[in-house]
Image (cartoon, rainbow, N blue to C red; front, side, top):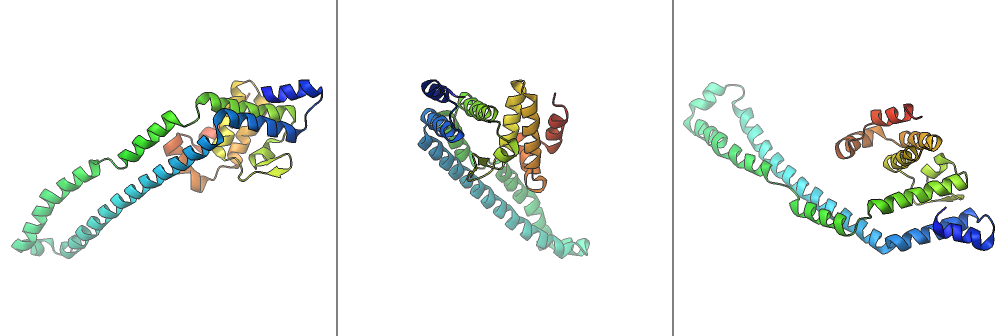
Length: 230
């Protein structure tokens, strides 16, 4: 139990209801983390990432437009390159493209995309993102509630607590982080259940590439953690 819930138990000399514990616990967490700051930071992060994807899309469109043009020109001489290059206009145009166009595109490819957005996200992380201590406190609070009230991991992972459905279930990364915490705290049964929940929520088609490239986490890593729990 968190400190706030312990105070309730001491004050009333009774086991508080789950609803009461949830209310007090997360009012306390929000007091520590400033709910509006969390909401604002999330919105700003989404906006910066959206701006970054827009710049990436613009760059991809530019390159694809160039590729469409050069592929069309290549198609003209692919059947008979000797005859095509025998025409001085054609040979000149090809030489110019190979000398100039590719040099320009080399520079364009090396030009960083979204540098301003990356700088803004870095500043956001430094100034407004929750610190590791706040994350650990939130996870420990959830695990304490789970242990004290014998809450089912599968239901929690699905977003169900005290008979109420949250706005969204926990994703693979949410479950994995809780499993890692339980493993660190020598709670193997809870760790096993949370690893299982992480696997159950893993959508290979949609998440495999994302998790591997961004989070360096593969489904094989999850299975390994799950199988080696002790």
